[in-house]
Image (cartoon, rainbow, N blue to C red; front, side, top):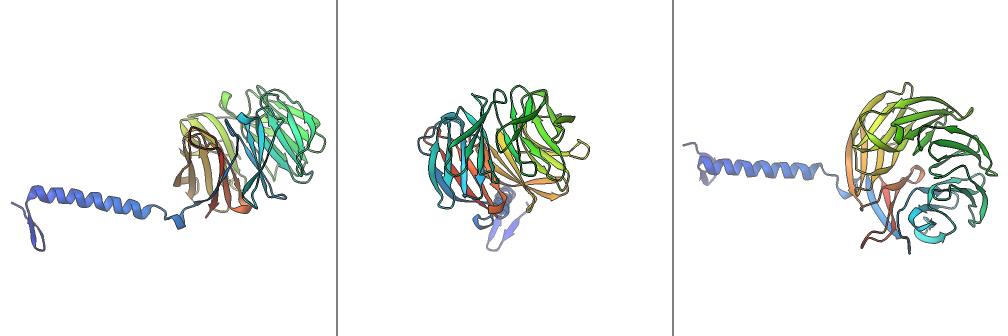
Length: 346
């Protein structure tokens, strides 16, 4: 019989095998704990939770006004826009008079906030100081995501069964529109060029648009995943990231030729995705109840370095690069209050 000897102890083969299994399990557990980031080393550190009082229903997109240091939240299910003072880290006011607000954007030069409403189809322009209602535009039903082009002083809004509209940010005039094959979800603007990239999930496409001529240039087919909603752009390295729900994964496209170059698993039910160019990371919020932090280890090779537990339904957020902060919108559900969770990024 083989004998495994420990000082002062002799074990038979059966006991030896049991001991080996336990030591292996212990070593695996220790290795896993060692590999986990300590709180001080975590890429996302929770700072504060700010309640959104009397807010019910779904929360949609967020915007940050750097001049006033205020965070604006589209409370779609509450028909309000919630305003938070992030300098004092407190809820400031609740703005009414909206019809299922979805997209929201700040126009710093004009001191304006644009709010797109799903139910009414209106894009409402507000004064960014006192939030008085200004010009109202009706591009079409289901006004959704909004983006601001500072160089052209234009707003762009996705709406209807398939269109992107260009709006004069000063007076709200509709300057032109481009027809698409389905309702547009997230879209991103190039800074060094005229292109706009648009997610069209019902057609499994990414539409590429020339913002100067407001004409479609091409479409890229999305294969192997569906329900692709959020999008982020790494313009320097010619990459476009899209977040998909069926299955839950991110896909990476080369913006020079429209080809898929990488993909990886992510949190389920995502609705917002952001690229951190400084750290070469992605921050992805999902209604499954997590924020994924994905880091690029080498060109087009990505690894999840954090899977931060949040709350069910918390699928929208905002990465503010100048602050190194991530804001997460948490809807009211059962015993969970509606709130904004604030994370420092490290």
